[in-house]
Image (cartoon, rainbow, N blue to C red; front, top):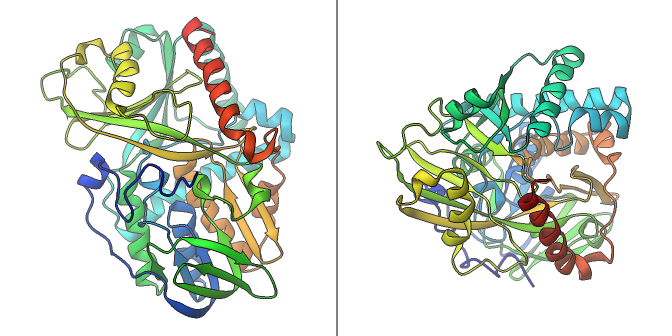
Length: 434
């Protein structure tokens, strides 16, 4: 199954609110013929665009190949949340990596947020940044654990931008009576993800990066120079960057064994106006404590963008709106009569450890992927790290490459049944309140 084509029309963005509210970019010509370049970047999402942009700033000749459209994948479809740290919490990282590396990883998470903000400001990307991401908890024990972690972050990492929400405060902030407490991270934020990707693409093009759309890579021939082949052409490059995430396919079996694609889904309601003014009065984004996480925020025109729903395979369900409406109404029963105007799905990628997988499949091939739902900031930073690694500064890449990302049992052949089994088990735990 080729996820580049299974659920989407060729060369077209999904019918999402993001696509409907983004300025156009391209289309860029497909790669034809045989060309040479310093660096070939495969993938036109945050990782690839950031890598191309930062490489061009360093003076490299760069070509970027995107199988569909710039920002076509998870980078143009996600929940838009720009969170702190890594996908694993700091106490977990301290146990896993030791205090020194855990501190370095925290600092890199802070660098990732700062990089996103600086790119928005420096490149004048109109992507509707808003401060504040709340994590809310269905069970009191989860909230108490979050409060303990918040104090640990304040004391050990100097992170003093967290606001604790008790039961009354979390209801006031979310407009829902479902949660026992929460924590708002005011150093985090949310944005329009496709506009951010398009802004990176425009900036890369302005710096001389040659962008090619509808140029699916079919083969890599390693060697002193890597030959990157598409249906209509080839690129001979000194170095290659794999920035494919959930759409890697068969380009690198060593990466694919550790990075598994999964689907997620989002709906957009009609603008709420006076329907439910109590929902998100301070315009924050929210994610809940379910393993099959729900996440939501308001769009710039006042509609609710809500992500969630369980996916047991790689084909999108026929009725995405019905799938996502169920968890949305559990949280907001007052939206029972609100129209859903857009519903879309997308493919992201996870690792078993929920930590990103940085890898060097060949001496002159670099890869970063598997952001596990924490990719807006980390994928953007990953592109910068890949660029500096190509230029000879490898410390941050080496740190990320030390993160444990064990292979999935059974390899790529077993990923789909394992996904179904895992989603069944964890969705049951969510329903039982574990």
